[in-house]
Image (cartoon, rainbow, N blue to C red; front, side, top):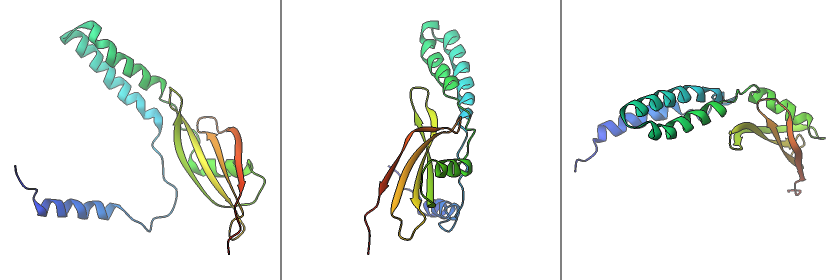
Length: 152
């Protein structure tokens, strides 16, 4: 068994550390789920190869995966910058801090923004969770709003 080269590990650690910037603040551009079509085409190519080289019935598995990739290739039409103000309009308090994350729901993995909102008072006295469909921009269900306990 060979030992890892400490010089190589150090170089990799320095490269990773350079790419991680804890001071960076701002929107993160989430990759568009419609890129799943690329994987779908790769699985279609694999389906043809398996059908020709091995057996046609064995090709059903990569074909099923290819079909799923095409069905789950939703376009991300609403980015974080659009999701935050839409979510803020769904609650009845002035919004201060907010954060959004993409989650995928259902068999076809439809993208949805989960937005957490805090009231603008200091310290916040309310928070809410608003879910938005990332394809249509519509609010999904009722926003969950709760009062926060007073601190201090």
